[in-house]
Length: 228
Image (tube, rainbow, N blue to C red; front, top):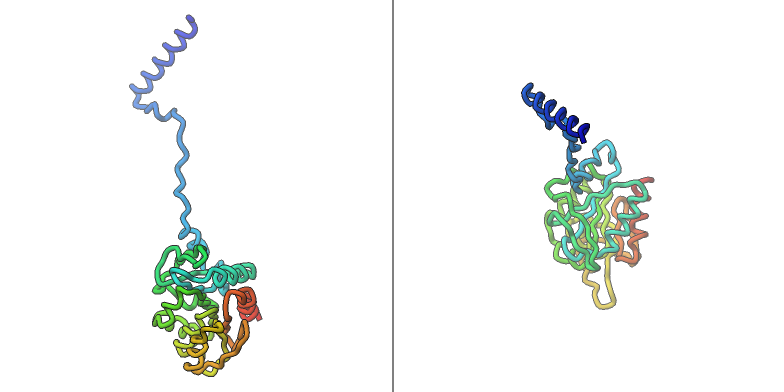
């Protein structure tokens, strides 16, 4: 007990002396490591610098609501396995929702697109894209890629968007249709396209596909064209 008392007195005297000399006692307290701010999704995209992705970036365009899941996720997976990086855009930024519940992060605004960063643009289909076939911003995007000798690809009903943009004239192309609905074939033909009833059609640097069942073949065709 006597030793503990002496030890306590010594600590009090030392502490009092340090205070008198202006030494803060907090100096001897354990220090917390500085907190690291959480990594956000935008941070991840920012880390994909131009040097990292040079010549390997693809732009995918989806409807913000009710894009067809397979027509986005299947080609995306094929392209990523081949070493390409995907940026996704839509009419809004945020989480686009597929008709089957899939989520695509539309992290690039339409006004932020720099053509020089991309090798190709892909227009994905789905019922939501039916409302965007006359979207003038999408038309300009398709024409800009086409006029700059880049790959332009469209699947499901979106070849009709390319036709309305004026880049399928005298080009072979396919598009979604059914026994009861041939309207999108009519759109192609009215705009000068040469319709072909095939799952995937390639004419120079334009690739079209007729629906979700052709999604994997569509993705592989894009890879082959970009790597030949």
